Length: 350
Image 1: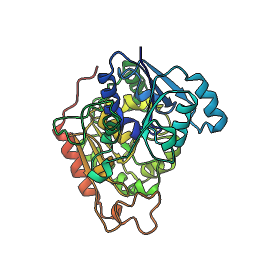
Image 2: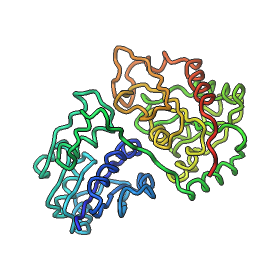
Image 3: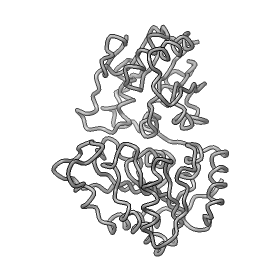
Image 4: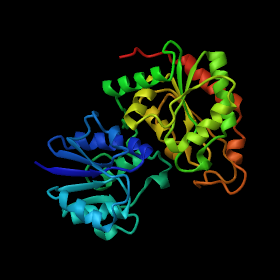
């Protein structure tokens, strides 16, 4: 039986956007034994999705040279490595594991470590990042479909929450005092990449207040522990009372909470991409990043973005005045949220 190792991407959003390519790989090679190699913080995304036979986890830090050789020795026996992660370390790991066929993009100075190194094409064509991973399969000869040219192909990044994830979410929401009879809105005001991806806390607070007051919404603040200061700023500026789960959800529990939401509101972030994959209607507020390349891959999404002379700059911190965000007013964001809440009725709870 053919043994295939996939080195998954390290960030939540990238992992979600690679799901379509993983589904294609599973479809194209149904007889192969497929193993995913992923950081612990993103591994729950793949659990129970039928994408692989096994998920092997790595610690959430760089392996270093010694770690690469140590892990490489444990990974021997694979026929092919498909490297969705672009780092030099990923290619070196596949080489030290003595995997004979090593497929990946020839980036980060690793061309000589790959047996099939290809050039990224999507930037030239202005396509969504989802196609970045799919195109690797085509260019390496794994798939006969040129996904960038086949207009009939529809990428599938769907995530189905498990019962355990939903039960964990229900427990957390109950402890936070959330009313299950009101439309739940998940609000994620943070973004790990940097402040140039974060709309202003006072404006999120104003939109959240209006959703509670005018739509009878139950707003729950979400985010990692590192995003607590930003979420606290939103809560302190609100006149209404939100529920607060920032820093209290594992990734598995977050998937469950998002699945329970009638609407997600937030920046270009991992939770935004998870919401799109879960089929949750969402409003995404974009600043420094490219909404064409990394916007929510969903038909039920409203993207709010103001093009200015310096966008998309793709910077972590804005060197001037965040004018791309400053031009986004609360009324526009609220109206998009209200429309989606009105159009999409509450799903039946499993």
